[in-house]
Image (cartoon, rainbow, N blue to C red; front, side, top):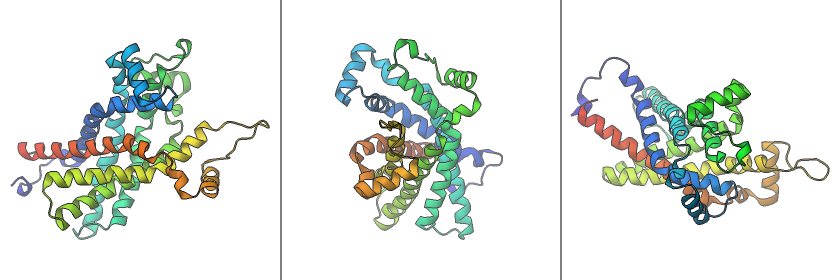
Length: 298
């Protein structure tokens, strides 16, 4: 069997989890991109999903659903390459330190937190380019940036605003990514062990079941941070010029006092529909890539 073959020399064994992670994320993005595009237009106040879809088809054509695809692919090539690759490296090191035994959940969670932070730092520039490209068509003609692709967007951002502007808003993004990846990565590995070893399910059922659980926990762990980030971004000053929140922590404390913990989960079903499909597709594509590599002996 392929597992008994001696490990190939060179850099491939080291870079393999990063390449696989990036490839699976990019394939998932190609499938999910139209949904993500509709989501951005809804957030920008262009109506319901049905209204947005109808208007885009009528006024801009099918190609509009893939506006910003190059930035989305670049984001996955950086963010998902870094987070999934580093997660596998971290869990492998932790398992070696644990004498080959399965990792407890808290160690998987710590690996997920770290991998999320690494991925968000690496992927932040591409994320900024993606958001700007998707939102560009909604701006007045005179205000549009008219980026032609992701690399043109990055070039223009650096030329017009400076290199550090590529990491605008990176702080909240990193915190959210840490929470999302803790839920996504730790729950996936834990679920695979449960479905395969405890329930005795087959490979396909295990992957689909674990991917679903992973998508749910990625959403559940990240929504509170996403909620706070959204409140901060959209707050307006009152008549005296004072803002309702002084920062993210102040927003979180006031939200907890006024609405309790469930206030942070406002809109959870919609948010889950946004996040879970990409998470599920990423894991499914990653599994297929790994099966292909075993078949061809990589």
